[in-house]
Image 1 (cartoon, rainbow, N blue to C red):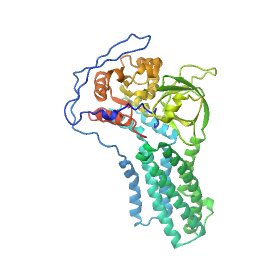
Image 2 (cartoon, helix red, strand yellow):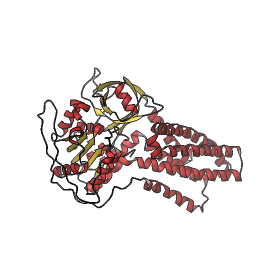
Image 3 (cartoon, helix red, strand yellow):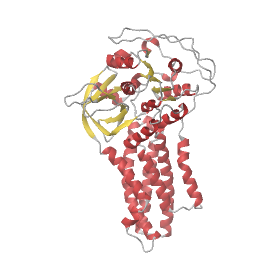
Image 4 (cartoon, rainbow, N blue to C red):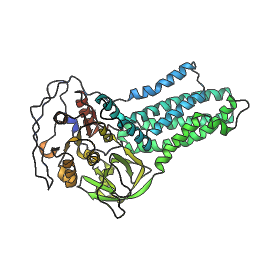
Amino acid sequence: MSHSTSPDVEKNVDTMDLVLASGQETLSSASVHSSDASTKASEVSVDKDLELPKIQYRLPAKNGRSSFIRWLNPFIVIVAQHDGRPAAPDVGSAASANLMVTLLFRQENFVNVVYEIAVACPHSAPVWLRAKLAKVFHYGGAHSGSGVAAVVWYIMYTACTTRDYIQSPSSAGLANVITSYVLVIMFCLILAGAHPTFRRMYHDYFEALHRYSGWVALCTFWVHTIFAGNEYRMMESNPPVSLGRYLIGTPNFWTLCISTSCTALSWGRLRRVRVYPELLSDHAIRLHFKYRDMPPFYGLKISNRPLLEWHAFATIPDDDVDHKGRKGFSLVVSNAGDWTNQTIKTPPTKLWVRGYPLHGLLYTSKLFKKIVVVATGSGIGPCLSLFYANATPRRIFWSTPAPETTYGDKIMKTVLTADPEAVIWNTRTQGRPDMVAVAYQLVMEAQAEAVFIISNPKLTRRVVFGMESRGIPAYGAIFDS
């Protein structure tokens, strides 16, 4: 998700270098102290003699080109089959079909169904199959891949409809060409704004560009579909059928209906709800909601400016019942940017929520018999829902500055209840741990089948690579997944 809490990006993580290409990785000794008032302080030593298997690879760069190429293959086939001159309606159908897939993978209910299908695999299935299914959280590749493919198709459609207008000018054809070029401009703006570099540097502008260009494109697409139908019904049938009959007989109309429904369903659930803030420290706050109960493994989008920005967080079921008999849920927000800093300094009493709660990365942990959970900073927030569900046996490794002071006794108690021998590493007093080494030791001790990490993108990639290169399935959300 993005569906996940914005992790507390540990300062200077760039200075953490794994020795991958040369030499051994060994563990340094460390200790874990439990501060729960009802639990006697305990010390857990990390085996300093455990050696990680050598590997001879460097951390590869992340790229998503393969997803786009898969979506682009049908484009090449259809163009080749028609000697480079495909019919405009066929190309338009391909463009609208890709657009539909793009929006479906941002529609909460559809994504939840995809998760449910993947997680339905039983534990009796081989680990390699369950490990593959657990990568369902990378559905963002389907969204971006089909989106780029839709733009390529639509540029081709615009060229075809321009050709048709030049050959047979008409008022409907002119409107079709004009709306086609408007759509191409909107699509190109969306693609440009979604470039990772722009998105990281100007995230608020990315959101606005993505949202408003998308809305303009969707409305223009309906106008365009009507004009295109009016033009091509005259060309394709003699005598021409009525516009309405022609439209309902085209794939464009139905795929556009589904695309519109995806947007309407999400924004139709927009509401402003009451929030009950619980200040944990000057670095973190826990926001409680009582307008509905929330099962484990769900995330939610919240905002105080619904037309400008949204922030996705993992939810945690609450135990306290209100006067209406609802337990409600909560989420943990830590200081990781302007919006989170403002939320901590000025706790909100009301916030906007949108869409249906969405499954996230940790829901796929149900595919495994036993796991190791790794978190840094406020990355522990999404994990609390996993601990509450208590669905999968787990070991926990949490690295964070001053865990008691920053996140409070309740969260510490939840972590220690989920794993009484949890490795809670205070980076203020113990320095920075070798994340790969400690995680590997916990996997060996627990005979776990997989590792799940919630952290910043750089460290997530490092731990995932460190585990997978040693044959251990590992999962962590990177950017938008």
